[in-house]
Image (cartoon, rainbow, N blue to C red; front, side, top):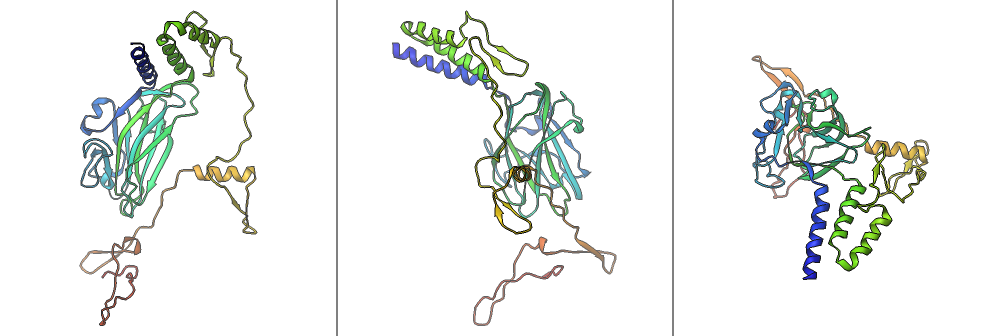
Length: 346
């Protein structure tokens, strides 16, 4: 019987701790048409607008990351007319924003030789749908099929918790050269509980589930930490740091800045061409360059020329080539593959 009570107590602790971190928002896109009724905002700002906006995922391109095959949100290069610029926005419902909060989602860029790009933003201006209120949080782009990838971005830099929205933006610079098909799935917004909140819930549950002979000892542990129900409650200072009775908080000096761990960083001297270990200034420049969002690849439009009869000829270069050529000799051997010259059609 005591063992059963102990197991039930452990389950109560697990349930109490997990409840603290319940998602603020969870969406699997089973029904894209129902999103506006749930507080989502779909804004296609493409110029000139095309024949599509955000739509239910098409399993013919690829299935969803989770759930039914079509249960994801999709967009494609037809968000804008041919040669236009895609700027297709998806705004989440209004949620509470706080430092440390995470936006998690699954993303797939089809690419297939042309560039697809998705940017993520946030706004702390309540329910505003003014796109000027949104600040860039991160960007992802690829000209090859990425497959489904789980992504996560953290909010930081807020002076205080605020109400606002997150936003996804599908971006294509020129649909005559770039843009294919993208999918978004399994979006969740997760609040990061403060360490003090988790400690209070979990330690309190442990103390309550303890056998009578050890409950007094565990209550003494709580008293020593200043967490007992009969003691003074923990206080949150304006800076967000929890203050506990009988505990002295000492501010430690910040460690000297250094490159992020996880790899080797080298600096190439532009004069000698030698690789050396970077000094702090060079390391800061390298780190900033690595964190900068990848720029859009801007490509020149294909050349055109008039033809007899009033038509227009489009001169394609090797970026549009989707085939290779080979020659078979009389003896049956295959000669080296070759590609046509720019503008040559075979």
